Image 1 (cartoon, helix red, strand yellow):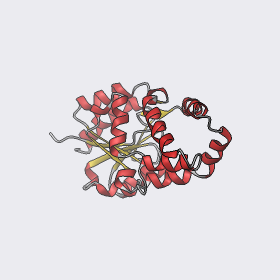
Image 2 (image 1 turned 180 degrees about the vertical axis):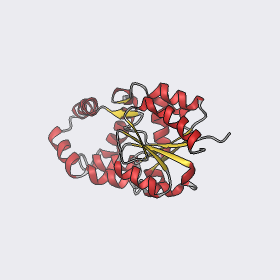
Image 3 (image 1 turned 45 degrees about the vertical axis):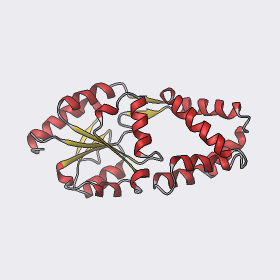
Image 4 (image 1 turned 30 degrees about the vertical axis):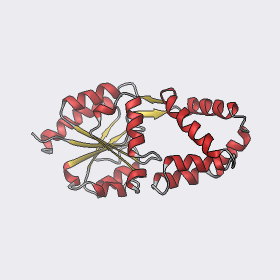
Length: 220
C-alpha cells in the first residue's frame, strides 16, 4: 500500500511563536549587553524586515542575517553579539516556540497511519536549523523530510515545483496564497481554518479523518 505524502506548513499548524515571550527574552539579552532598546526598536522596524526577506529567499544565511542585524546596532562587536544571540536563542527556544495542544498526538496518529509528513516552510532558517528546532521540540521523528525557502532559495508557492506529480500529494496549510498556489501545482489542499482549500478543517483533530477519507475516495 502506497503512503499518503502530506506536505505541511510547520508554524501555524504544529507549532507557534509566543511573540510576547520572545520579546521578553530578547529584551533581557539586550539589557544584559547594555544595548539601547530604542535603537533595537528602530533596527527592528527599518532594517530587520529587509534582512529577513533576504534570508527567507536564501540570499543570505540565518547567521549572516543576525550578523548584519547586530552590525546595525554595534559595528565593532557585531560578530560576537550575533554568535551569542544565536546560542541564546536556541538555548531558550522552548520558552517561546511551543506546540499546539494536539500536535504531538495527531502527528503520532498520522505516523501510525503510514502518512509520510514533509515539512515545507518559508523561513530564515536552513533545513539543518529547522530540523534542530524540531529536535528540541521532540517532534523531529514525525517528519520524513524538511524543505525551507532559505535552503531551497525560493518561497512558496514556487517551492512546490520541486515536488513532482503534485496530484498524488496533499498540502496542509493555513495561508490563502499558499493553498491557492499549491492547487496550481496540482496538489490536493487541506486548509486549517481556511476555506480556500479543496477541503477545510476547523481543528487539527479532524485531519486524520480527512486523510482516511481521501485514501478511500481519491485512491491516494
